[in-house]
Length: 217
Length: 280
Image 1 (cartoon, rainbow over the protein chains, first blue to last red):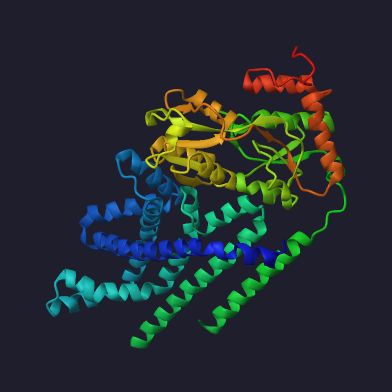
Image 2: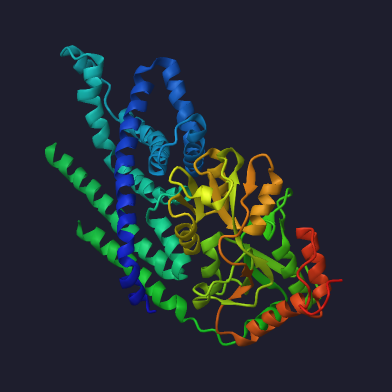
């Protein structure tokens, strides 16, 4: 069978897998950014112990390969009575690890904000929580857009690891088709193109976001 | 999408397409047999997750029945069982390793199927295999009929033969598909699944390793099968040498070495050298 013949025959079978990869990547990205914001808040407002706890958390997740939490959650949770679906377990592992990275990205951006703004916020009567939510966080997020875009691309590619725990995302589909048809080159070339498309989409989205905030300022 | 991005994507696509066209076009004229003899060592692709065929022992050394068979081949080629380089891959990594020419041949609990033989060539089988079901003792499953209920879950490997067997023998059972045998075993240990299907000798090996946790169900899923050496198709000289070597091991001049290896890993005599000869 020619390459083209193979692609037209088996190409459509990738659609479901493409959907899984996209949905998991989008939900996990949103989750990771929200979780990163929460970690930043604890670091800023949680006192010395809060900051230390976040530090420890970041160290643990930044210094372990993400496959580890994926395995740990998928195979460990049933032992404590939580047999969550594989996609949820894998997504959670991606959120936990990428949240650690996101919190560090946000911390970097936070340092770029002028301290005077806190006094200004206080002087117009904003509570610390309101100041964080209305003044600090939006700016932190805007400064972070390029780095967050990078992180989302990394997360998107890490979804391939979910193939280890039965999730039929793109990489698993390629593995299944390789075993089924023996056509390893074709199977993985199609996947490479599909990842490329997804990553290009994510990058375009973040570039658009950056342009939009530049416009508004 | 900005112009630059579009250009990047186009360039990346072009590189991919080029790779697709160039890779398989590299022609192979010389027989692998001559290449192997010139090189002075055999390059063999294998899995390391199929005990007792090919696996890592307590010291992390790659050992097993299939590994010893390869060492016998190296002895025949170079008078030295050590002249082998093993390339360890996962199950689906076997075919591209052969297709790309990265390895001369492959072993490792690999079963011959006609649909597989479209893409890779096989020698005749060098050991019988079959597929059995390994269950967790806790599950209380005693037979393949027991397993066929929607409250049970079976852990499969990602090859289509596994999926076909699941549909045929226990259509009601839920199926989880893993990319490694270790995933299958973890699934049963963690309670994600109650059972897994795997090559009979591997199932026996694991059941004997943890008698309290696992049990092999009586009966095979389907027929007795052949595990064989696989190689890139189209190289008659190389295939002929390997097939002749396997024939000699199974039924001919090297049967004593074969028998010794068989007894080392399976603790029993191999099938008789020839059906009309009494086992000695």
